[in-house]
Structure formats: C-alpha cells, structure tokens
Image 1 (tube, rainbow, N blue to C red):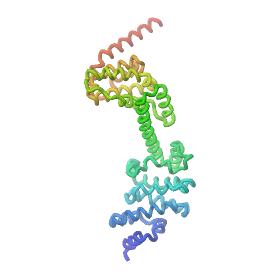
Image 2 (spheres, one colour; image 1 turned 45 degrees about the horizontal axis):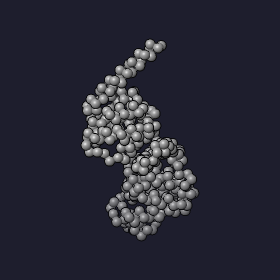
Image 3 (spheres, one colour; image 1 turned 180 degrees about the vertical axis):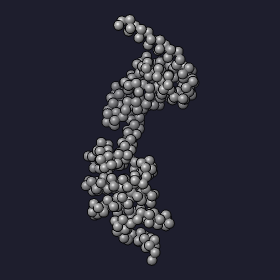
Image 4 (cartoon, rainbow, N blue to C red; image 1 turned 90 degrees about the vertical axis):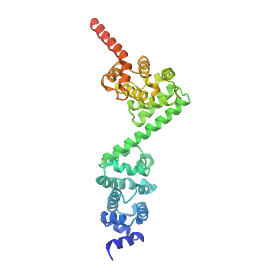
Length: 335
C-alpha cells in the first residue's frame, strides 16, 4: 500500500498517530497529506489537542520532539493556534509542563515564521492575551513571563506579550477614565487612579497624556456651531487643566499633548479655529510651557492643517520669543 494511503488511513482511524509524531515523521508528509485530503484537517487537529492533554505521559525528549513538530505544523498552517488551549490544562500548568513545552513550540514556530505572523495566528483565535496562563496563577505576571521566555531565547515573544499587556492596560485605563469623568469623580481621585495604573503597568507619561486628552474630549457632546464650540471647549478644558498639568511634567509629554490637540482640531472641523485658544489656555494654566510650544511651531508639528494652525499661532509664538529674549536680557543685567 502506498505511503500516503497508509498515513491517511492511520489518521482517519486515529491509530498510530503518536508513534508517527514521536518518530519524527517528516512535517512535509503531513503537509502534503492535509492539503491533498482536506477532510482530514478537523480530525487531525482534534487528535493533536487530545495528544497535548497527555504530555505528562511522554518523556522530556519525546515532548521536545512533539513541541518542535507542532511548531512546524503551526507555521505551515496545518494546525490552528486554538490547539494551544490544551496547554491550559490545570495539571500541566501546575507542574510546569505547559510552559516548558511552549518554549520549544514557539522556538520551532519562530524559526519558520516571524513574530508578526505568529502574533496574527494567535489573534485569530483570541490567544494573544492568554499566554501568561501557561503559568500558575501566582506566577502570572509580565515580569515572570518576560524573564522565563527571554532566558529561553525568545525575547521577541516576550516583547510581544509585554506590548499586548500594555495595550490592554491602556484600553482599560481609557475606559475607566471615561467612566469616572462621566460620573463627575473628583480630579484628585482620577489623578491618583491614573498614577497607580502608570506604576502598575509601566505606562509612560506621554502615553498617559494622550489617553487623558482623548478621555476629556470624549465625555462631552460638542456644539456643532463653530462660533460656539470654542467657548464650550475653553470652559470644559479649564475645568480639567489641573489634571492634565499633573501629567505634563516632561517636555515630551507636553509635545505629545500639542500634537494630540492639533490632530483633534484637524479631524473635527468645528474645532479648526479653536487650536490657538486651547494652547493659550493651557499655557496660562501651566499645562504647556514655552519650549515645547516653540519646538512644535518650528519643526515638530504634524502636516495636518499645518498652514492654518501655524498662522493661528504666529502672534502668540512671536510674543513668547520676545518674552524669552527680555527675560534673558534681564538675567544678563543682574549678572
């Protein structure tokens, strides 16, 4: 009987699959068979899921071979990343089998595909945010995950998971901020919450100021009339300026806020004439300072609405430059 037919019968009848895998059967044979006999895909995947549930029954050497082959099959598209669900078995996780197996699997997978392709496969089956579950609950921290996989030579995967964790934390932060603002929570409490989240999730200040700006601007139903929306915006932003000031302690954060304001005013046509007035408000409220504003004007602005916004800011920037020159002159006289 031809080899392909023998393998087909073995997979269909769910016999000898384990021995084939552990013997190091050529991945290309499986690849060829699965592509030729499409009806085998589902059955084969189910068998692999069952196989992974019983990893404790194999020796370490056998598990390593199985992990490497599974990684190759995932890279070839013969398996869906949903098979990783089997690794979340409580006993396998508790005894460290899942994490050790995952290291070999991802090494094999990443040897065939780049991190973007692997991440895409994980996202398709909603597994991109579940990798920390490979560890027991008391070890499910980004620090532990990063060290474990980086030490194993999988820095790319560690960085990807860290980035996913940060993205998730940012989304949760914005959602909670909008909720707190809609309920009129005191600015002091909002500020304390944000600082705790920054520390817990290692979120940079310039990232936080962007989230705060979006949250502040989304908690209001804006007037559609251009002549009225500026007045409404100034009144609203004046209320929240102490909160924004608490998270613009660095020049990078101030510049980030300026770019966010520019982008918002450009994307929301009714705000096109509001840009300069918002910047002046924030300058007076000590949310923004001279240097970032001058840098934005000189070369750090976006292309969006560039000519309109630079024209609006021209007189204010000239005033800032003159004030700066006068200050320097006074300092020299004192010296």
